[in-house]
Image (cartoon, rainbow over all chains, first blue to last red; front, side, top):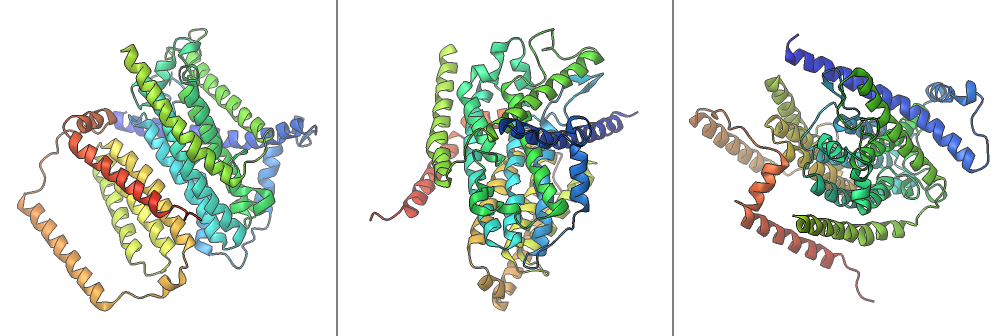
Length: 342
Length: 165
């Protein structure tokens, strides 16, 4: 096999594997959300389909496909159809640069090891707003429209805070490549960026909640004000796409958090923080990464059912007048510390 | 492969660019804005083919992700019906076409006279090389741009402030 052909073949394999794992995770994140919310609210939650409700995602999917796909008469057809497609994109695309394992055989377990990895991710994340804005515009009615406008303002604002919050991490590592960021965190718990740059982590995770439209920042779909916000007019599989888009960007954001702050696929025990030499170690690394992501997702779900929603002006105030100055101060402080250390 | 990708990205950029300014199917400004975003993404693909990864990523981040979203925002909040009804004036359209043709002729003449570009030097498109260049050789232009941006920002804050009651 020529190297080019090999590259294409293995890249295609990795893309298919990553996308399938993401879709499976989306399905079970929805189930986890329902079970955890039930637990928080002292209910039982869906437990009828299969053992402990484990086949519930299958039932949900069949239901979404079989329901009538109703298109209201007043919508702008083209944008109305385009929006659910665009919503799915960011979650899928941002997986491309995230290292989900060290290596399996001779293949590095990352689809594209870009030297500007994080900038690519931010670029893709910033495209996430298109789906929601177009849904609001295409629906051509007032609540979706307000939801779309709100979400574009919110996502642009928190993108700034998010980008500023990660800069100290890259100042410490000295590279934008995400594999290097993980390599830098190998070799001990205290090397994890969450302990080296705690303020960065807090700002990043808060901005991540805002970017994925999760409570306490889910203003674009605040039920008591906007019905369901941008997806009010959608039904059946188109609505399901919005749902899946939200959960896949939530998983992608968790994967980013794990990569930047929790050491990615490394674990400072059992020698798991060095690139794998054997297949078993390679598989263990992937398992470590997926478990960390699953824990992050559970944290995001738990937060959703524990905190009340912000008011819209509070949200903007927090983003621009608290997070942005804090982020800038954090960069300055990190620079001073690094300079003092020489 | 590289050549094939170049033609794909170039074709997408040109077609989307054309549809952004002269869409025969719809005069909706939002459609134009979306086609412009597609064109910008295609251009960033061209940057990546030149190994200018930083530029490619920033192109998507700034233009497609932030500037175009603001465009959408403004278009959505404006009353669009006026714009959709307006037709381009014949004189303006003729003048613009003539200028575009002249520009195209000039560029082709320059390209043909030069005998085509030589093999481009290996580009260092990463953030490290770019940062080093910005803060050594091009420090003065960089600072001037920074001052310009600050001035623009102050202007925006001044224009959008609430009147004191």
